[in-house]
Every structure is written in C-alpha cells, then in structure tokens.
Image (cartoon, rainbow, N blue to C red; front, side, top):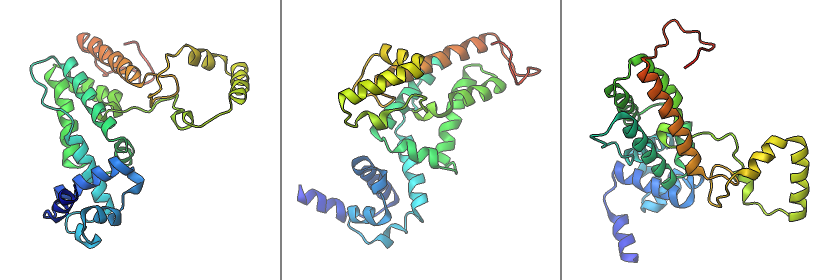
Length: 241
C-alpha cells in the first residue's frame, strides 16, 4: 500500500493529475478541505508546482467541474428525444451523487468552460434533433434548468437539521405547535414515505421526487411539441399550454 502511494506521488505532474487529485480530495474530505496547500500535500509537491498547471484556485474549481461533467454519459444513441433526455439527466444525477460537493461548485461558477458549453450544446441538440423548434427549445432549456446537471433546488430541504439529536418530548411539542400554525405542511409531511438516506428532506424519497418532477417536465414538453407550440404573440403573463 505504501509503495503504491509513493509511486503515485512520484508520477509526473500534469493538469489531468492535478484535477483528478483535487476531485478525489473533495470526494473524501469535502470541498471545504480543498486548498492549493492541501492539494500539493496530497500530490507530494510544493504548492508552487501546482501553478504550472492551474493558475489559481478558481481555475482549479473550473477544471474540477469539467472532470465531473465529463463523467456524464452523453453517448446515448438510437432512442427518441424523450428517453435520451431522461437518461442523460439521470446519468448526471448519478454523477452528482458520487461527487456531493459538485453542486455547490457548479452553482458558484460564473464562467462557462468549453466542456460546460459543449455539454449544454449537446443537450440542446437532443431537442433539436427531436424536431423541437428553436423557440420551444429555448423555453424548454429554461424549464430544465439545473436538472441538466443532476440536481434541483428543493423547497422542503431540512436535511441540515435531520441528523441533529432532538428530545422526543420536545420534538412532539414542536410538532404539535407546527400543526396548529401550518396544518397543510404537517399533513403533507405525515403522508410522505420515509427514506432515511434522503437528501431532499426528512421523510422524502429524493430519487423518486427527482424523477417525478423530471417526468412531469418531459410529458409537458412532449405535449407542447405535438401541438407545435410557439411563444410568438403570447402574453408573458399567462396562456394555457
């Protein structure tokens, strides 16, 4: 084991190796642990050696996003646009689950690299190849939003408090008070199927919720496409779909 680690440290430094080590460090210890100094320690080099391959931590983070996006399966052939989009997005979700830190970093990026632009272009291409107009594709991409990267912003996200230890009696009292003030929220929470590993929120099956929303969108896109929907002349405030 020690020999393998030493051999890895002696391997020539390259941009790919730097980015791979950064991703591995973030996977194992969290993105908060990542710094040029901690990364150089993992690689067994002095910090200045990293700057030959990445000019700053921001460039390092951009490169890490590229590595993650590169893991998404884009080689989907021979199926209709709807299944192609579904498989692509679910592949992206699996990648994000392997790299929990990536969502935070993707959301923080202000510049889009060629890898990011290429991925977005290929996603648009699926809809265009499926016969969607440029107009409809424009609005579809807005609706897809962050789902193309495998995540969404959940309205009920109490995953930060779920793991905290709470006295059962105190919890019951808090729940009773909540039920008086917010009966519909409590009613829905009580009806949810409980999944201990959920990252959406306490009591939610996060994978089910993700696919449920995705399928609703895809079904809606399909209906609009079949109706040859166009935004031309439509009010920005409404109109049936």
